[in-house]
Length: 140
Image: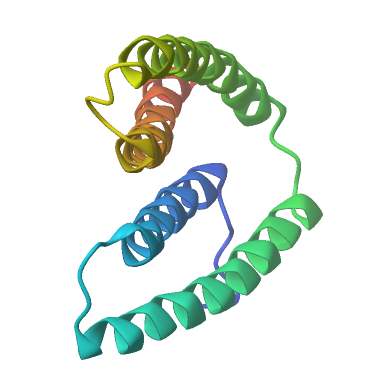
């Protein structure tokens, strides 16, 4: 990794998508119903990856904040965050009502709700990068 390379906001957003995918994999390790000996190694590897990745992400964000401040990029990110917040709010409200309604029939359990939450997190983070890229291109 080139230490002199300038860190962009888009780099940080893509890194957060990778982080969310790793969190989804780690959730799978906790939510699985079967057991294989290789799962322990995979879980430890993903956990170690997340620890190192969080440190790298933290250092990249710190480097970004020390570099020149891009007001337009920050404003574009705030627009994306507002849109993604609304998307996530709709997903969470729909999930809450679905869980309340279907919970009485025991059609699906907490594992399905957990998967919907984790997948929503990954999808919204990907949508965030796509929206930011589209809005940022218009601003250039």
